[in-house]
Amino acid sequence: MTQPASVPDTPVPVPAGHGWCSWHHGPGEGLLLVTAVEQGSGPGANHRACAHCRRTYRLVPFGEQR
Image (cartoon, rainbow, N blue to C red; front, side, top):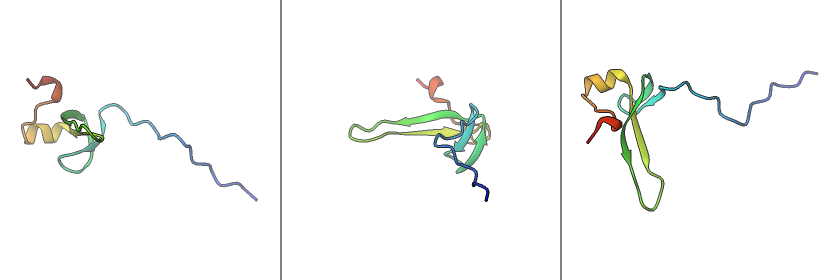
């Protein structure tokens, strides 16, 4: 009898710049942080946008905002 393949306990690392785009609600490449929401009593939120959405919606990366 064979053993089923084990699932690692640690998440698989995502390449830098790849992940979930908060604007088109799907996977994307070239993601950059666009907004950071801070909350005093709970976890905040970070919104990242892919290169296409940043161009389309004229979003400015967080590090370039004044």
